[in-house]
Length: 380
Image 1 (cartoon, one colour):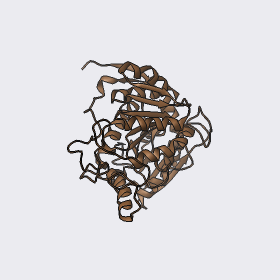
Image 2 (image 1 turned 90 degrees about the vertical axis):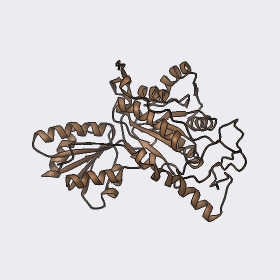
Image 3 (image 1 turned 135 degrees about the vertical axis):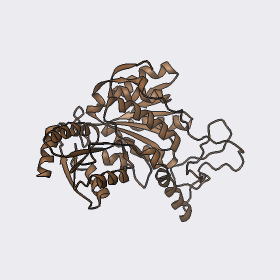
Image 4 (image 1 turned 180 degrees about the vertical axis):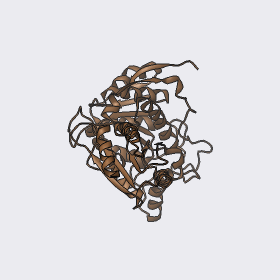
């Protein structure tokens, strides 16, 4: 295979990965530090017959993406914290109506407009619980430019296959990091499209309960009647307040992700089998942890890394298995917020080990020395 090496920025990789996965519509509103995603999309999408639209605001961007997807096109938007907040209502609509779409969120300091050019990881919980109600969503957290490319490709595929919104969650450093990526070494994978309705049109139910819990979606022009609403709906698509139908409708969308969890979850483990201390981190904090582990190992201290590439649903059984194999009694969680990921880690550990937070909220990244120092204190 001939190598196709390119120097790419993380944000640029997200855009190119989405296009390679078949994304042909992008609607967005420029916002630091994600603007390069829109910039690349505006340049590259027309070359493949796609459509780029700069909308008047973040809310309209999310609405346009939903509309394009309902029209049968793979669609994506990109934003940062304040814009991600504005998209939450429409994101909830996409989740409730099971409309495939991808949202890239390049995190920056907050709350509110915060520090637009400084890194943070403060949207971990917003990505999972930002919109109201019990809702299904997938969140992927790349830690390199290559992974920003491949995980955005996977985001497009997962959103299509499972009829679910997928968030690609980067911190500002990964979004603006430039690395060499061999695009030829990243496999295309099978082209994934949502399950379109076929067969008899009479009796078609747009939210039918199927064995895989993924209802076939009506393709515009194919003649299948479909009613789409954000109201809780029965299999026929029309609103319902019948308790059994309402409960079944919400439960099916969350059960759908549980059923396909093996396909969704991805994680990375480093030097963990004999670790006395396990570090759980995402994004640039995970990269700092890798350097810290190398330094700690050179001192004879056994530390390892568990990195959830799929952040939500959290790969909880994988973390429990890694912890059980290692016998580590302490888990260090470095993150650029006041403690969000550590809450999920504590839930998963359920007393099996002590979870220690390591936080930074001043617009600076957590350094390998910060992590190594905290690890030494924990192991003392």
